[in-house]
Length: 331
Ligand code: CUA
Image (cartoon, rainbow, N blue to C red; front, side, top):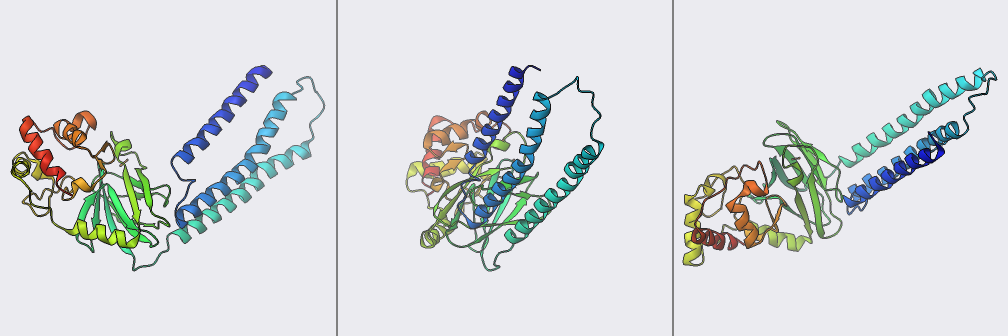
C-alpha cells in the first residue's frame, strides 16, 4: 500500500468516527435533561475516554509498523520483549480494562434501577406500530403522547401486545425492552418542562422506524389539568354534521378497532380516540395531526404506513367530511 493510499484510508476512518459522533448527539443522548440520562451520558463519555486510551496506542503501534517496516532487517528479535508485549498487552491490560468497565457499568445499572415506590405509574403497551398509554390510577388511556409532571419520578411499566419493542427517550432515560409475557419497568424523571422525542429501539418489522412517541413534561399543576381533561368522556357531537360523523364512525368498522369513551365505540385493537384532537401527531409520530393529514390517513393508511393494521375506508366525500368534523371535535 502506498503512503498516499494509507493516508486515504486513515482519513476515511477519521471521517466515519466524526460522523458517528454526529449521529449520537442527533439522537439527544448526549444532551441529557434528567438526572438518570445525565448519569448515562457521563458513563458514555468515560467509556469513550477509556476506549480512546486503548485505541490510540494500538493505532500508534500499527502506524509505526506500517511506516517503519524494515523487511531487510535480519537481526534476531528480542524474545523477552515480545513475550512481555503479548502477556502485558494481550492478557493483563484487557483483564484490567474490561473488569473496570464491567464494575462501572453494573454499579451504574444498579443505581439507576432504584426509585421510590409511591410514584405515578404509567403502563405502556407496545403494538406494531404504536404505543398504547394507560394511566391506571386516573382510569383512562391514550396513545403515542405521554404526559408526565416535571420534578417527580414516574414509573413506566412496559409490556408488549405482540413482538419485542424497546422504549427509548434518549434525553430522559436508558432504553428498556418490552418483552412478551413479562413486565419491565423504567423511571422517567424530567428536570424541566419540554417535549422529548422517543423511539422504538428494537427492530420490530416494516414500520419500526415509524414507531415514534413523545414525552411532554409539564409543571405539576398543568399536568393535573391535562389529566382531568383526559379523564372526561368525549363531548357529544356539537352539530348535525358532526352527529353524522359519529354515525359514519359507528357504521364503517372504525368502532371495531377504536374506543371513544362516552359513545358505543369500544374497539380494542387500535388507539383510544376519545381526545384525538388534543394530540399533536397521528400514526405514532408519522403525520402531523391536521385535517388534511387525518383525511389522507383515513382514506389510505397503507399508502402512508405500509403494513399497518388500519384498513382503508371507502367513504364518500361528504361522509369523510362529516367524520373529520366529528374527530376534530374530540378535544
Ligand atoms: Cu417497535 Cu421497533
